[in-house]
Length: 503
Image (tube, rainbow, N blue to C red; front, side, top):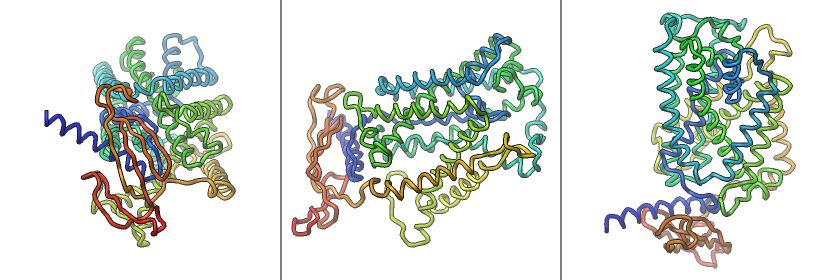
């Protein structure tokens, strides 16, 4: 029994620690912490899902998404059916609406769903690789896969090789997903970095194996690219299996992953909007920062995410070039967002403003070197995203990403100068916890769970903050005087007098 109590106390202490870390940044715990490490790996990998993402950008670019896979199978079964762009947009709208409903009414299922879909993803990956390799009787030679270089761009070999980074970069973005979900993770300080690293490992391995296998099984490149299905991967499945049923079965495995990925992307995007609104970074921030207390999800932020996705999908009604530009902007935006903290870290090192960022997961003495390598790669790929992909360049195949990014930058700068700098708060710094009172709730008292769950309320700086799972009373100040340990292994508190003027 004592061993069980020790385990419960350890879990309890870690939960308190996560809440205190959040409180020190000036935020209150409003979202429900339910994600385990495995659940978050599933969440993140099913967003990155490198091998299916690469399957969607084979040959023709980035327009082969979940809706395209559904319509591509319809064309394979009924060759007389001709896919129109408006079909794709309307089906994408249906997917977005269904995902929005799932995010609003089923947030308590996200951890379980993420774990199930992780298993589905890995099993589907193995199934696809084994089936296409086993059934394809006209495989390409190794020289075609590893040595031959076919260039249809009109540019030189070196430049074309650089252009190929866009597709691989698209297949390996979004691995930052756990960082947007830390307020919903158990033991986030320790487990979120692990989830990010594991997602990259799994994505890199599955992506490489998938590309090599598919390259062995691909037929004529021009014929595959011009497939009436609109999705070259479906054509490769059909050419390998010589069966409509077999091709649809493999395509359906991918489609399920892409549909769940769409659902989780809305989850991730809504949490970004919620966090930005909480810092007063959006118009009507107070509205989008609200959390629905019963479900403990930012419903308004979810609805805004839905609206933005539908608006961006509408571009596909009119122009494929414009839609591809949006995708390029999104990919470049991800990579620039990854590069900014690395740049700040490197500059701080050389300007003498480095701060020690302690935590359970750190790179130690190799940190600055790895930060610099990552920064160089991210900046290089971000520049590459702005290049045109076909020569000669005209108004129809021009890459307008650089112009769009410049407009976004200009709007951001104007917004910051006019309103942002007055309203945006960001996380608080220098807050120190002075006292903590913890009580354990009884079964059914403010708890959504089973007997012995904790429930918390904060009393900090004269305001009352509330969150699920634990009961804590906190007071804090902004400066440090006499240090003392409050909760062993959790936080250091400081006592100051009122004469200091810092209470």
